[in-house]
Image (cartoon, rainbow, N blue to C red; front, side, top):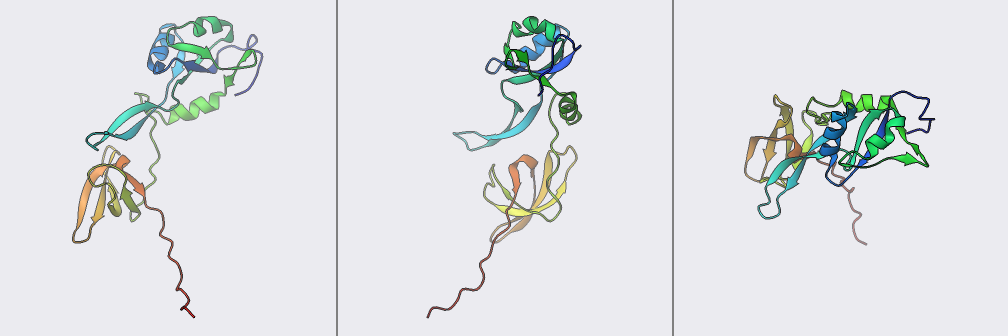
Length: 187
């Protein structure tokens, strides 16, 4: 974010601080004013307290913040839009967000606003299940399935090795196991 004279510029991107859980409302209302907005979201996995079941939820990438493109002379119109708490300021000047930052976010966004995350798994990677009914089990990453949200892993248990198709968000790379060298015999 940089400081510039807002009256000499045309439309620029600015960070908007929204009211709690009103990101979608603020985005909708700003769009109704004809402003271009950017509100990236992520798919996250939450575990239900009572059942222990893992469910996917969509959360905002920047809780309580969205981005809007407008002329800084219209700051009052933006500031008093329903769902908006304020425009992020540096001193008394709105904090401008560089176009390149918004371009990077938008390049990774699907039409519904979800950020597509880069795949971090390669065939043969050791993984462990961080949620769901197989939580704590380990296996080997095998392949991606169409849709990019499901994967196949080879599950290892004490007496069974099988193939499991599971949501990708339920697994995580297993950290390398550090093995200590041979211990010196006691004197």
